[in-house]
Length: 161
Image (cartoon, rainbow, N blue to C red; front, side, top):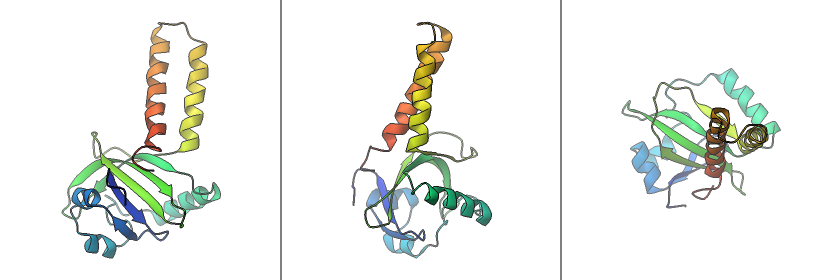
């Protein structure tokens, strides 16, 4: 188990198989409690089964690519926290989930990206930048956009994902 970040190993059905101490501390539970909780226990709102099924079908059709994003979780005591996450399939068919606290409103919608989406948008921004005048406000805005894509993409490869 990776000890550098809040890390969990999740079964394909969403049940937690293992978690390191940082994950347990972040979620405010013991390992036994976490293993006994049903999938979705930290969702702030009950999931929409139809939307979940549609997302899962699309994701699996793409061969379950790595995901990274930002969301709000609801702890068992009702506290809401904004977190960054990365989810990557493991060789044994389970998933490594890494959570990291982040700033931002807990009211914001979840944001989810695949590595391919981030890389594609990053490359498109670099092509746009090549057509802009150096030092222009537009070029500065695109450079900031590229930096956001770089950060998202690097999240796939940091902390053992």
